[in-house]
Image (cartoon, rainbow, N blue to C red):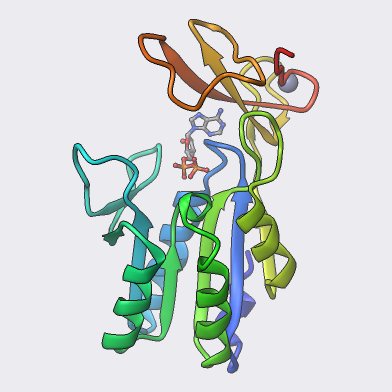
Length: 195
Ligand code: ADP
Ligand code: ZN
């Protein structure tokens, strides 16, 4: 798809965005695998999302996996890139990292290396994740993937949050104690946010 980036001799930032289920992790895994086949040294990582367990794999919704390092902060990424020899830095779920991730990506690309970031471009309210929006602006390559809308089966660009089966409210907190929560891909017209 954007495999021409594999020919880039100077550094670059590639960003893979879209809603949940769009195939972002799958595409990231594909690019990591190709880099490894080409003999490149890849640092693959993802942020730690909760304290109960941390699985050291990038996992796609269709079961593909790739070993990765789980980091709790951008400072840990800085430590990794300072101590390891690598050619490619790959980050999944980049929307959950602090703002400093942007300058780290810039610096690694300026060193002549390849950076590949994958993440959600919008939250459940269809508002941009600021870090991801910034990365999209400074990237050499942007791949915006769509999922399939679970309501009308057309291409989906957004992530619908459901609380007890109903569209979440704009003001609903990120953690809702005791509620049954789920997420699904939806298109612009089927996506709902209760005001
Ligand atoms: P993302 O990282 O964008 O959340 P993944 O790479 O984890 O996506 O998963 C993509 C896979 O999810 C698809 O290849 C498909 O098998 C599966 N899938 C499940 N629901 C959907 C959907 N609504 N639209 C597209 N793919 C879906
Ligand atoms: Zn739809």
